[in-house]
Image 1 (tube, rainbow, N blue to C red):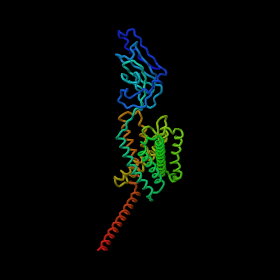
Image 2: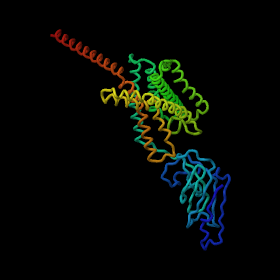
Image 3: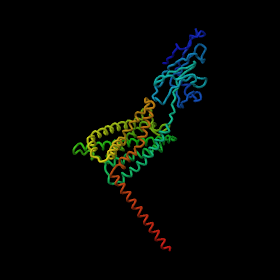
Image 4: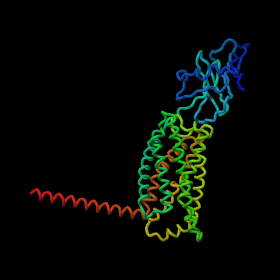
Length: 430
């Protein structure tokens, strides 16, 4: 039911002393003069709107024969929405009136609204309604640049890390196998995101890309969980005598879990709502009907578990790290331990939890700070993996040194052979 402030109509004017105010609410006329009669030229607004639809009954108001004339005092209308607006922040109500053949908002403004109601103030009387319009969100150019630069650097580091895990024999084991699978999943996910997330021209192709991203990022988080579990069991082995659970990890079971669970989730999601893969601007999951939770749900659970693993590990190592700090001979070793401890938090995906704070209730500038922090930290995840598991790993450092020495010797040998051959050729020519 609509509510009108009759008391605010200017009936106290001497010329309107005995004039009657008439308000008519139409039950179904809105289905006839609907959003098809909306043109952007007739909407006075600075926002870039699209995808209009009426979300209230059409109401006409007159004072005697003065329909459409200007009022000395604005009149207020409170409309009930026909459909509750669940796209908070992405849809805005516009107070409009019927101007001959189109809807217009000249002389009307939205003074207040929530999910179920909109209050309008108009300086004239006519036929009014509430028009919902989708807000065209502009991309933050700086965030886009940070994302592409960060992911590009991560791709390079993930490629180098994967080569290291495959070729460095001295570090082969369960931990290296976990690092390798995580690096491969993140590499493929980031590569597909950079090359395919904007390919929205063909709906089917975009849906396939969205499904691939859904699977690869879920697989990456599943391997993050296995990383966290293995790290927890390994550290717990330091505290509990003869505790060998960390050594019971089997590669075939890990692959079945790491790649099988995401496949099941994506298969069920695609079977129940394949039309929700691919949006208008990005090849990703739609948020309508909660479909996005087929990704956010598992990620949220994994982040909580890995965060609990991380805090437990720090608690177990607290005494050992404090005693170790007394024994280290240089400040550099202490700094390396600190860097490893902090970076491990990012490698396990715990920093992705910042994304859950990017909700409409968070206002600026806090929202921008969270968005930039989230983008910078998580786009560089590949760098953390390469830094911690390769650059700061002593065994890998030794392998790198050996490789560099072999390459140097090979280069010197080739140079010597080439020089000798050149000299010999010149002697023969003489």
